[in-house]
Amino acid sequence: MSQNIKKVINIGVIGTGAIGEDHIRRCTQTLTGAKIVAVNDIDAERAKKAVAPYNSEAKVYTNVYELIHASDVEVVMVTSWGQTHAEFVLEAIKAGKYVFCEKPLATTAEDCKKIVDAEQAGGKRLVQVGFMRPYDSGYRELRRVIEEGKIGQPLMIHAAHRNPRVGSNYVTSMGITDTLIHELDVLRWLLNDDYVSAQVIFPRQTQCTHEKLRDPQLVLLETKSGIRIDVEVFVNCQYGYDIQCSVVGEKGIVSLPEPSTVTLRSEAKLYNTILMDWKDRFIEAYDVEMQDFINGCLTNKLVGPSSWNGYVAAVAAEACIKSQETGKVEPITLPVCPNFYK
Ligand code: NAD
Ligand code: ISE
Image (cartoon, rainbow, N blue to C red; front, side):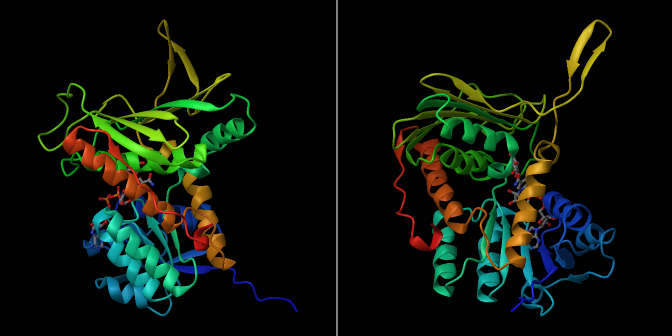
């Protein structure tokens, strides 16, 4: 008997700022199988403006709960600020709807655990977290090289996560919950290993920061198999959006490629452009990630980063935040992954 496979899902977006607007664009113009039918933002005018070029008939909700429970909204996309995620994701689970939640899944491990528990209680995977780096071709290539044994056993990782600048609401703990959270997710995926401890060290501070933000920070992680990782988090580096990752193994080193740009010879200089924005640096990864989510909704089977991944990253993040305060090496005790998420 032929199955009636759905061709398009209707999405309601909560939070139409930088990434919300970008995901509306990609769902409408680049990807297939999705239609944005509803939007909500605490700034209703912003929500209206964000969706207007893509679907002028989309409904602008001023009440977020009404959007989540609207009968024509089949899937919820949460792209509001991190501290609002848990409430909206839990409500979407209650409504039995698929939900794509931008990282972080929640800003505390306790809230992530509530989501994991609610999802399991419902008996079906409904949540995908916006960890897009496992979809990035560079990280995928790193993983392939490691898995093929080309560098022998991995021993160390040197990584850097640099943003040109951040806004005045960005504070020291966000270096972990908002920025390092990407590495916390992607590096354990890359190594197929788990963290056992974390330490955060503060080097000399840049003058290009404000009093609530210590910048840069150096995060040292250790994994179960003894791999040592250092990640420089520098969010006011001025010069560009620069993501580095080198895995040092017994027989070689494998590093993320630089984003491809033309080389320019001009006025006695040889130039390469450095990107300035995460939107451009990971544009393909976001596309692949979101298409995978849409396909998962259409075929009733999500396979991308789960709420368990969001939870594990949040547990590791909490150890880092504790170390920001104590300056000490803090243990990371990760719970055993339930079969539901394997
Ligand atoms: P932003 O400030 O540009 O946009 C957030 C929007 O959410 C704003 O328009 C704000 O008004 C709205 N909002 C806040 N609270 C709300 C609420 N209670 N109800 C409805 N709307 C609300 O921020 P952004 O850069 O787009 O980041 C949004 C989320 O996406 C964050 O969690 C961030 O970490 C994540 N993000 C992920 C990536 C990535 O690389 N995956 C990149 C950027 C941002
Ligand atoms: C932002 O929210 C992102 O997720 C970007 O990928 C990251 O580089 C940046 O530091 C975050 O603020």
